Image 1 (cartoon, rainbow, N blue to C red):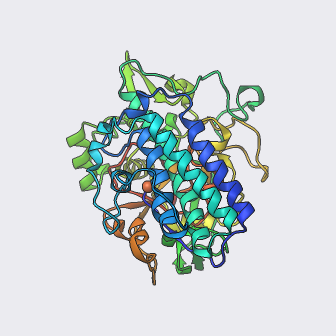
Image 2: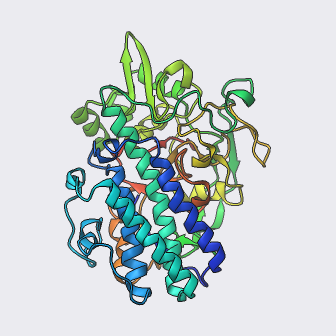
Image 3: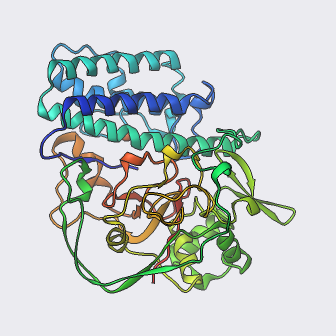
Length: 438
Ligand SMILES: [Fe+2]
């Protein structure tokens, strides 16, 4: 997830920002609590980074873009960290190749944690001293940046544990999230209802006065034909029917590049599915689950190509990002997000009804990101931020598809209707799933 912020019109009040900053810095450490120092060094696929690197890089972001520029007399913790923990900001400094991050045995974890403390203390001094408006905007940006890395940290650990022959469990499956077994509602998957939306001229993009990334602006008009959107994501049980019907062997269902990806990678199921004795199981942050245990939970870790092929098989299509946003705008941000503690898509019918009183899972947010059929492009009049920060977003606007809605590892206050995530169409390690449209 490589997203960057557009500045808010006026910065947030300092106490609000201090609370938000404190929460996000503590939460990242909290997510590392179940991990050993060795777990935190694993980088098991090209997309992933070690957890220790996430701890350091999120700190580097505050040091590089806030403290160096805005805190008088700031002394860097270690001058080498300025380039060592840069991810991809070419105009800031040179940086090591991403694939080498697992070789950063030095600095050790203890030193990285001291780096975090050093930067936290400096940020506190800056806020107490009454930071400049631009510094406050950058701190809010850094908070949002770190929330994105919280999601990545868990996504990467899931892959790390999946590749570990011992298949470790990040969270005890008996340690329930909100609305787990105790309050589980009876009843299976709700019928795959479609909600119809009138077409017409609509506005899309961020319209509030708070934080958003630059890629959510400018708000602009789009024309929508009448459409219908599924009330929920496609489930594992439904996806298993696609597999059983030869979905991965039928060329007519696939885009040309998708079929190439199936053949070259040997895909025959979502990333974490495995088959033994004719029964599928799915690896999650809560261990290996039998397909019948997750049959009514949303299918996750599928590529855009698989989502597109499934939609064609089902006689449907993927929504455009503008259709998704039109359907989500004005809806409450609730669902199975990081804060619920499930850390994996949950079965439909599980958990308490939300504020809207709708069946759990039928809100636009949570469980897994929905692939859309929209290519990731700048909106008309898009302008990236000035300077190195402008590299966060605009330079990725080719060869990627937009995803919407957040996942079970997205912090609830990070997501909104206009939020655009984006990945290359063959990407499968994310919590990415399928919502159908017609
Ligand atoms: Fe980053």
